[in-house]
Amino acid sequence: MERSPQERIEMLKDLNIHTYAYDWREKHLPEMEEEFQLAKENDIEINAVWMWIDPKVDALNKLSSANESVFNAIKNTDLHTTLWVSFQPDYFQGQTDAESVEKGAQMIYYLYKKCVDIGCKIALYNHGDWFGNPLNQIKIIKELGRYDIGLVYSFHHAHQQLSAFEKLVEKMAPFLVAVNLNGMKDGGPQIFPLGKGDHEKEMIQILQKHGFNGP
Image 1: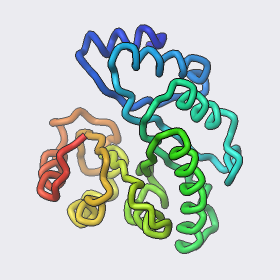
Image 2 (image 1 turned 180 degrees about the vertical axis):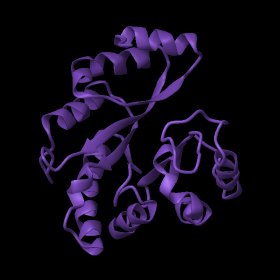
Image 3 (image 1 turned 30 degrees about the vertical axis):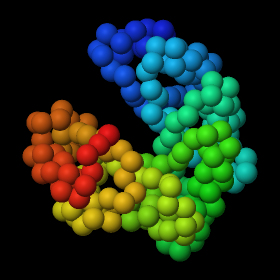
């Protein structure tokens, strides 16, 4: 079901939801500023805005028109939020691990500076493949020495990491700014109701054990 910005904000108010992360597709670009402004007027926090880096259209120092439009919408509405960034897998195609860290760090630093310029923060989002491994994301953060860069961990992109989850959390904990919850069964499905899986309760307890209490 498609909703207008006004309808989405009204839906959130009806559900008593006061904060959300904004995901988008190109069709949403013309209405993005309207939604950001409506959220502000209704005291609803947009705590994050998604950004996807695709090597076909995004390059160091030259983002796609769509991603530039996102930065413009954030700036024009004086939105102070966190950019959740992930990469198309082929951004790192043919690279060694060290080369991938360097290439990823260069792009993240470019985005980091753009975020700082408009009063925003940046966090790295696990979306599978090389960049979706939190250990690689931490390598990028350490390469930059920018410890105000965070990590966002989504359960529904973590099925391949179940057996090593606690060890991952030990490494991720100092950087975690958000965790997206999902029901977790061995082998999927990727999207599954929370509380209906086999592992999410234990995973949440592990997060709490290591000091993470949300969001």
